[in-house]
Length: 269
Image 1 (cartoon, rainbow, N blue to C red):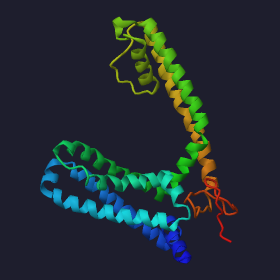
Image 2: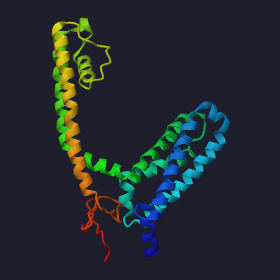
Image 3: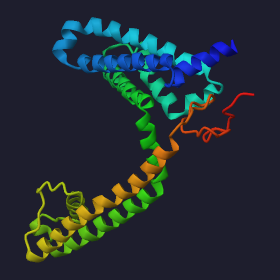
């Protein structure tokens, strides 16, 4: 039984073997087809003509994904940890709405059912687990989160200062009716979106707006550099890595003995 569980875990959670790659490809196709079915179900003409067929298709995919979710919990050593992880929650959100729709009957609950059915789009997030580069991006974001937080505080400070100054310079007569409205203008200007619904009219206001626009272009380069450094480091660590048999976390070096997330041993005695 242990050998069977280990083989199942290798196929389901590892993508280095031919069987694992085939499993991932089939599952990706199923996820994409199921999400397309959700999209088509929201188109009134298609729903009127093929609503019953789409309903059957949805239940077929729900049963398939339920079996796959149960298999994941069965073959991993600590199913509770996986169930509480990001991918575990996404897996659950991908199948629960269909089952919940059974208990909501009656016209007064149709809106609730529709909202629950939309949650099936969470299946798209399951694709991230099968894209190795997505895990690298998440690791890079985790590594740079403090620097990015400091950067966001700096940008927020610039927005507050620029909005307050423009409120004093332009005033309500030029569209800057309040400091929050002026801060909205500052956000649009700093991010170089430039909707144009609020614009300065005075020479001083235009000078300040020009400075804020130039500052916005300079600000864009800061998070790019921070993220690039962390991305390079994450790619270096991801070379020749393995997944944890207990919680399915990736990113362990070949010489690692314990999981970085749950602390479980990576090698069985």
